[in-house]
Image (tube, rainbow, N blue to C red):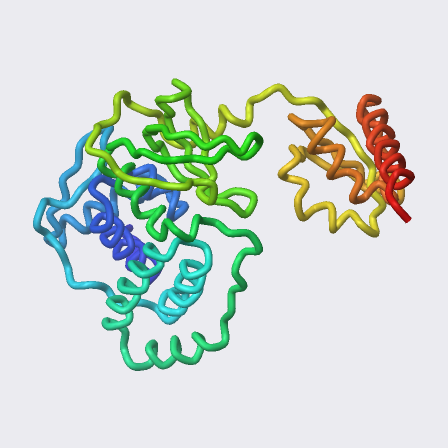
Length: 324
């Protein structure tokens, strides 16, 4: 018996919209999105075909619409229309100026197809939603189109030339890179790419780019997806660390513990025991731990305890040497 419920109708329409939004869509991708079986997706595809939608399918590749086939835009739900406001506010604060302008232009086009009720709803929400800007600069202000240049490079598979100031040595170098992808982590935007100067994959913080331009040079090699390099980046040598934090302050530790290799936690009496795999025990982790040291204990390793005492001793000397 064929399910003709409203839920199925909505899913079939959503499948059609996804087919229009991508060149190729895999059946498993649709099954995962709608949390149904592959058999259900196959049945929905047959329903679209029976309705006259020209779908081309190839085993092992996926489904696509025949070139030239398009339907008028589907009306947005009130919730979908409202989501534009949050997206627009985020784009204004967390992307560069040029990309923000492009999104604003696209948002005007989206609003133009809304009905009067949804337009009124958005206008009422717009002045009552505020997203504070990040505390640190995400981009060099003299380069307003950083993300646009990088997006073009990734899509066209062309190299970019950049002038970059390294974080540790403040050295300024000119280099050509092949951007693999862009990601946001720890309140910063990063580029992951193959660097011709270093002959290896490197990541670059966008705010430290001093100059950037596209070239006509094609990529010299085929690169893996971005996730592959991010996974490799996290596979550096690590050291197991266990600390116990008073329950009264554990919630504050939770805010940034993921940046220090947090793995798991459990209750131990009046404390929360937290386990980490840290790649920087004696530097990054030790200095972070000092923020909570008066409410925390180190279980392991012993070397971390020694490092904390060393840092405290160095600070004691600084205080003793400082002028009154």
